[in-house]
Image (spheres, rainbow, N blue to C red):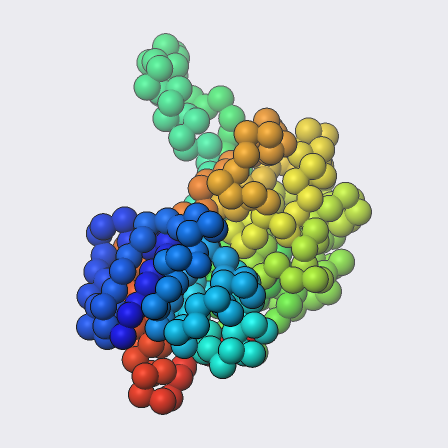
Length: 315
């Protein structure tokens, strides 16, 4: 079997093992693939794995030998699944591989807004503490989370994990978009109630018709003054311009995100100049165990397909 990986670098820059996939056939790994090269690299491929490379209708119908598409992630919007169905090609994903890592990062972003750790550490290294007359010194006081209300938008595996940590930190937790499987350490309410009562709002929902642009001028207006907003889901869930305006006015006290509307983020993005804004480079999912799990589950998906019992089929 000829297996092609079109954009393997982010999953495996060299510190995890493609071995489980290599055991199933001859594997060609490309770190990155420009859209103009997709068709050429799919020639002769029986199975292809992608992370962010888009497989549109032309690519899918042009790859005459292709029988299997594996997405090296949970989201599969990069694949034209309708075209794959027409061709009889199975499409699979890797569900729930990064729950613990993304929840940890969401809390890290929140603590970054509250504790100002890196900011104060930089000041200390510059000699600011040394110059003080007292044993204790701060330029910006930390924000105490105990007793605050945290609103979770999207209460699936990751949102529920964040809720559990928030509960352990002494926060009252509200949630919307309940999910059947995870236990939720909080109270389900309407979105309006969550917006009105939360001191912190954390986004954990996919980008869909009813969630894209969810955080915008009119929904921000319903929030308390001084809310902290955390986004580890998708940049398209917010209006970046409206969030920047709310940060400038003080309506939002801080915004922390691991995602942006365009990735890599563009220098023209208004968030790059916003006050009280923390941005990380969409790496919440990348601890080594998570990336190895992507490869292992992807190999399980392909092996199950070859055995005639496909799993984790999407679309």
